[in-house]
Amino acid sequence: MSHRVFASLAIVIAAMSLGATPVTGPTSLGSFVGAAEAVGEGAQAPADGAKAEKTAATNAWTPPRTPDGQPDLQGVWLSNSATPLERPKGLEGRQFLTDDEVTQLKERAARIFDATGNSAFAGGDNVFLAAFGNVEQYDNPNATGSAVEMVEREFDNRTSMIVDPPDGRIPPLTPEAQQRRAAAGAAAQRLPAGPEDLSNLVRCITWGVPRLGGNSGAGPYSYYQILQAPGYVVLTMETNHDARIIPLDQRPHLAQSIRQWHGDSRGRWEGNTLVVETTNFSPKSNFMGSAENLHLVERFTRVAPDTINYELTLSDPTTWTRAWTAVIRLKQSQNKIYEFACHEGSQDVMVGILAGARAQERAEDEVARTRR
Image 1: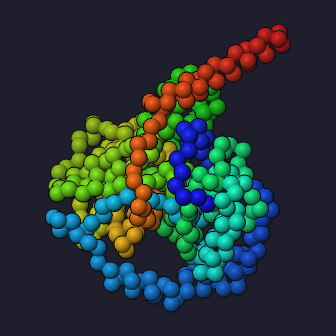
Image 2: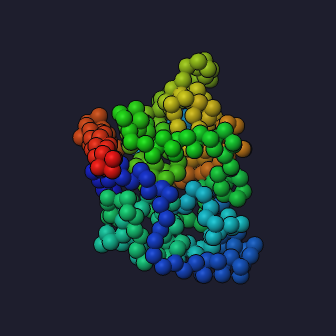
């Protein structure tokens, strides 16, 4: 896999649908399934020595401080973990991989996504799934880019970013949310009449808060920059140039009648952890089907010079049957944040989408006329 590469907007738009695309090619799961059966409970954690060493290093390290005495989280950070959001079916009941299995996954990924670029661009969980399935080559008919446009993905012992529920899976949708999803799926099959029929992401209004799952999660569109000033923390996302200015002065949340795309965030320090609570999302927001009823709690803890544990707890009783929690490991990057120009500066993309829809309508009308 290559170092950081910025692709064209066409690649960005095409990559949005890659998160749920299955890998293709011959698979060989025997080594992992066999290992699970052979070691049983022993496979639930990394080797004891490695685990103890990591724990000792974490306990011995103290984060640096800002001039006003707060833990220093500043810098550019990248979410580049290959760990899938949800635990794959083939790893049910296993919270951790062994060190040998992680090594094997790394070797497979290096082969599949080498610098030749023969494999397609893999977004979201597909890097892990391709390596886990041991495919000869990753292919995706929706991709317009190749593996050379990917950032290096980092494998660790975890089998899912989701740590709660214990099965590593997103909780079931409520009946109400299932109806909303079905309606959204039906609407997506219709040709867009105008920009308002396209998603916030495609329209470049916002890629949403938080960034978790699919190609909006780990990968080249997951560069964060954190800045701190007395009484405030600023979280900036390179992709779509979103910035969240978070006050730390214990002011109350906005009135419930005031709704915002990214919600209303308030922060506080709990020891070395920055805790950010966000409410007041807009009914037009959309995080995995959740909108105005989303309650988000984020915890940022710098556990090493190059690592922030970013824990997210999401709850919405109108969307999921219970709250759930995921942990992202942000890695420090020496790269800079650049301007990410979306369709406001590239109108040909939006014009092309809508012109294509009109052309398809004319073609369908012509077919209908010839059948009369």
